[in-house]
Amino acid sequence: MRQRTLLLLHTAREYGGYALKEYAEERMKYKILLKEKKLKYDTSKEQELIAEVEMKPHKILRSSKKQKSSPLVNMKQWEDHFSNLLGAKDKTQTASHRMRQTYMT
Image (tube, rainbow, N blue to C red; front, side, top):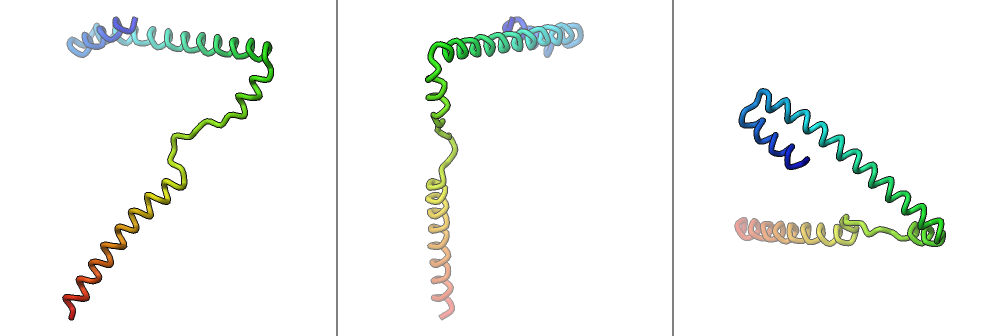
């Protein structure tokens, strides 16, 4: 269905008119199909989790205690980054300050 929808999209871009209307209808059908499949998948995963918890209740406690690692930058990395930036900036400021001192004298 996806390939047909994409083919209709290319046809609609080329010819417009009736092909555009046909593409819009096919796209709506495709979007509905995706929503249904996602709902079905989520429901099946939920049922699997419920069945697993009923068989092994201790697993849900163990999994809830796990902390997921964050892909975000931690505070130490931020501090190192900015200290490097500001340190480099301070060095250039002192160098420019030294240049002014030599030109003034």
